[in-house]
Length: 76
Image 1 (spheres, rainbow, N blue to C red):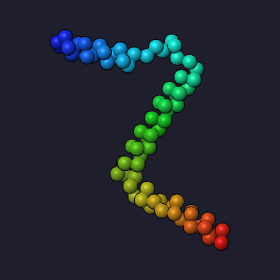
Image 2 (cartoon, one colour):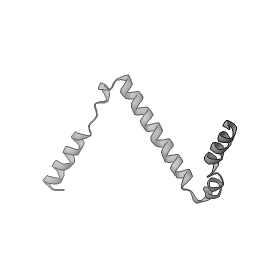
Image 3 (cartoon, helix red, strand yellow):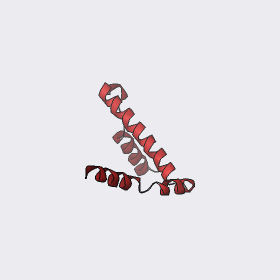
Image 4 (cartoon, helix red, strand yellow):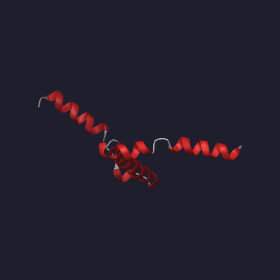
């Protein structure tokens, strides 16, 4: 590794450095919520894009439209 690569890696490390001790309670709450949402979204993507689940999801694709049409009939 040459000197320019070393300087580049050091600048990246400095840019992404986090002072964990300086984080407030609200910072920690935000971090935890962000990580949990990321993990849940990843799990949902795995579930949705899994070919084994295609038939189950395709059979339910018009549920929102059916519920809207039923609620519209109740309003009339």
